[in-house]
Length: 328
Image (cartoon, rainbow, N blue to C red; front, side, top):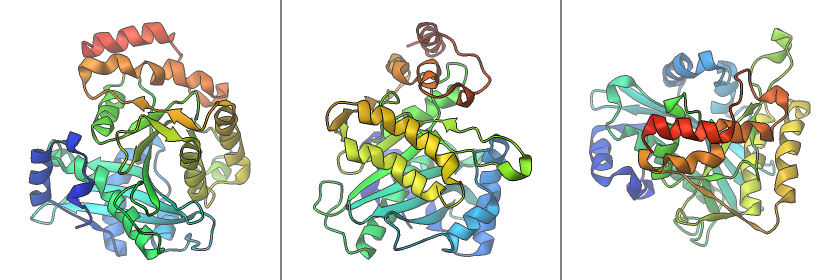
């Protein structure tokens, strides 16, 4: 069992989490059969959206072919499978655990989380959100950097990082996902300070197309410091640096450079060493708090070609539609 109950934030609902801990196991895929089972489940949901790396890329990561232990930021890939008491697949989480020994910083990059329909509303999602903390702590221990339970515990600091879509009033899932992560101790690095984008994972050469990065929100949990309302500049920058250390294995530097330059130029212009975080609303009554991360507010921070085909509304009208849809 990968999950340490101490790593699940109280906002997830202790009773629900306790039931999930009793009902499910969460373990790493160790062989090809387990990897295939997990990958197929992820591909059915995320593949059609272009949000999943190709199978051969992830298999290479899982088998260690892409891991360079001597790199400034080393990275390992993990695929976690959740099963019920009968052994049925209930959910999948994959992530990268990235370690910057010099900075004494470990960042778990949360790639995909999936709870199969029959197991939703069971508390399993909370376990999948917390499981990477244990993986990060194990990596810190293996590197000889251990010393505490969180970022302030005397050892290497631990951060969970998630790429999330901007809020779209017409897509309830964009709100539901962020509310869940807010209850799990996550906050948002303001996109006008760090406008992050994911590279285009399509096979660009085979398709003969120009890569189009995907603008996303930088969502973070500072483990052991979840109540902080700000993030050190270097830690905010590490969100981009650690993701790109992984992406560099499959995406060219010519594709990564514009993403990096767009984000870091704004971060460099921010005064001070601590960036105020955006608190994620915890329920429908608070949805007006999503104003800074509405699609209409986020997309203009990126080059026009990255913004997608859907027209942009004005932020004020988009906020009105969001509040009307949620009664907030």
